[in-house]
Picture 1 (cartoon, rainbow, N blue to C red):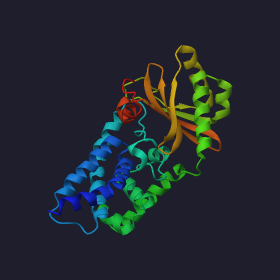
Picture 2: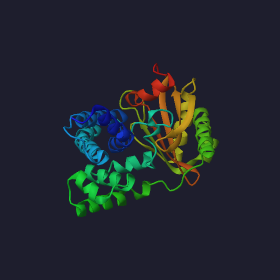
Picture 3: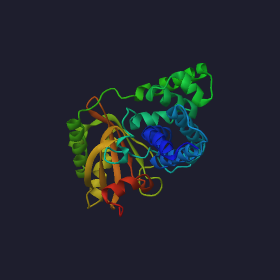
Picture 4: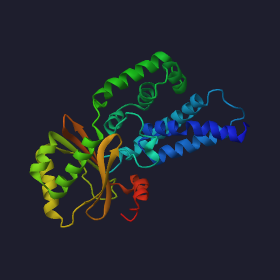
Length: 294
């Protein structure tokens, strides 16, 4: 076997990139960490050193993710309500993981791709891997991989980030939306929301959430105004943050439920709101904020 220190050093140099790839493939930090751990076990068992560790480990992680996606897709077909990726923020081990421009909206668009299309797009377009290397990783001919990446690109092109908000403006919008939603302030919400705004809420059947997507500003206004009238207690803002590349915040909602809210802002208006309340997807954040009792 390769020298243990060299083996570990080579792997650790690749770990952040492997975690980014696995998370982008699966949409789950916990599953991504399991995949990377399995890759380490296979790497540690190698009888000889590999000339290009990055290429070899990328191939292992990609193929493990492709296998995992088969069962993941089956689980999502029976998922209660909307499924959203596990939220990652700029406050923890996710720092390395969110270093590229794959936002939450793009990850949701990639859900419509086949596993091979998703892998080809991520490896080639996001991780800048040459087509020949992608073909070797996927066990396909370069021409076939070129077609996979091209089809994927066409399907997700509308979801690619078109502009980046300045940090101060992103924070301002997130705080303004939190206050307006908390207070059920229809006038303030009307100034923030796009006419065709959508609200996606993921409770996973574990906590109360909207089972269906709420579409349109009129329904959104009725929802927030109605919640304010129904409940005496108000949500509490924990902090604003970048969540999967989008401006947003962590809050403690009525009933002491921890949740993240990410805002897709287009042309100065909030076009989509993504709320994750499923406690299984928030364990890493609950631990980071000391709100495990939520």
